[in-house]
Length: 293
Image (cartoon, rainbow, N blue to C red; front, side):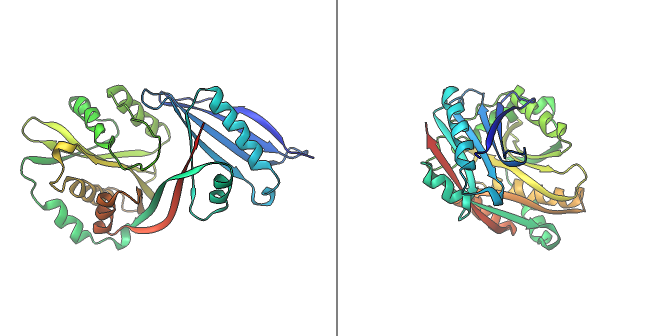
């Protein structure tokens, strides 16, 4: 008997996206797989949807994934989306599944981890303590201080030219409200947001940032959310400076934290160099796929 596909409702849309979901189950109601479709809602990305699809190992090659994919693709088209993204581990069953269902590879990613117990903290300290004329480091936890909110939001355009290869990712449009909403979402999950930023001493504006999210209990692994420097301030080593300070603060602020996770496009040679300089070790490769709708 074919599996039943049940549409579900996600009760918690955010200001930047909403989600649709489907559950596949057998004739006894036992779950066999699921699909989640994220619909981006902000200007610059309203053409985009993102798919997460999983099928129980014992239920694979029985058409479950195909039927879940068909439901998600139909919904994305009904919502007027132009592109559907999905990420999977390189060489995994998901890699093969997406390829045979018409998706094309658009971006290769390397995931890496810095084990804090083995980190070369003397080198990190040396990097942080190097002077950068015309700039200074600042940091905060949680929501950006009001006096920095406007220029911090403006500094987010540092990510606009982040290497995305063939991905139809669009442009993420940031304003103060979106910055505040993102911080509130992280806090609502019980996690801690740490931000290190660089300020131009000439006018006090934020010109670069590095964000790290840590589990609320300070254990396990933290996750880097992004490091960027405005184009007009690049070439001064500010990215390495900020990320090194982020590592140092994480180690001092959360002594039971195990490591720091990051993911970087293989084509982003500059950020890969920063990660290598700080001792991040590759853990696995992933592939971003895109289906043109």
